[in-house]
Image 1 (cartoon, rainbow, N blue to C red):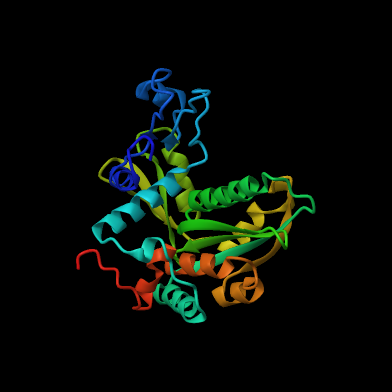
Image 2 (image 1 turned 90 degrees about the vertical axis):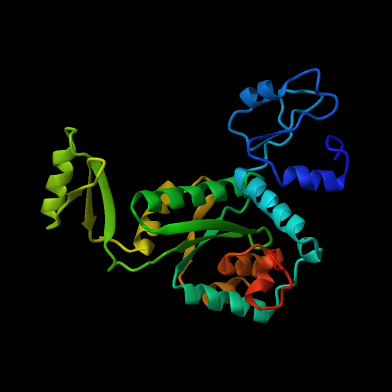
Length: 289
């Protein structure tokens, strides 16, 4: 607000941000330029040089995901101002049931991985949980599992954590599309031979690249179990206690944990908390009204 002049000015300006966002605060203007800050903190979503030490980025902890969520929330608010952004609804049993129902209606698959943490988990355990979550997501994606998104929850009181994934499908019966190399490179024959050895064919697209279809040889649960074998886990994550496929089973086990119902409802609804009433018909938000 110091840089922009006031609260409303912050909302207006921030709603038009395009990452990476550079804010040079008072006291740093004569020490570093916008271009210098971009070069120094390349890869950061939000860049706010510390006036005391401009080599330190005070906005380093802000991810592109959280910054994008902030920008979107401001766009929605400025389109139709209201209390919905500042007073999100309580997550009642009805709202949670609606979120579970909506997830089932869209026909996707939810997989939750319950992690067991070490007794003296360090302060950086949250980073280890997120790192493992990202690794599971990336490996599943690289192996052509139709994974859409992921999120994480940590209950400090019970020293347990949950990684949750949504996939288009968990069925092993659905074929998978595999993309091969361009047809004119040397290893194109290896791709063709592998397809033929599986009893499958191949085709060349308009850009000269090979493609094929294969049967999936392991379920997503088996793939996750392989990825999360003890040897593959970060140091302070001891193991996997359980893998869930039913949101109601997840809720039964975790519903007493602080903030869990809110987190699960928003994930299943695929909505931020301030808009979750759109699925229950209770919200008065309508950006074009």
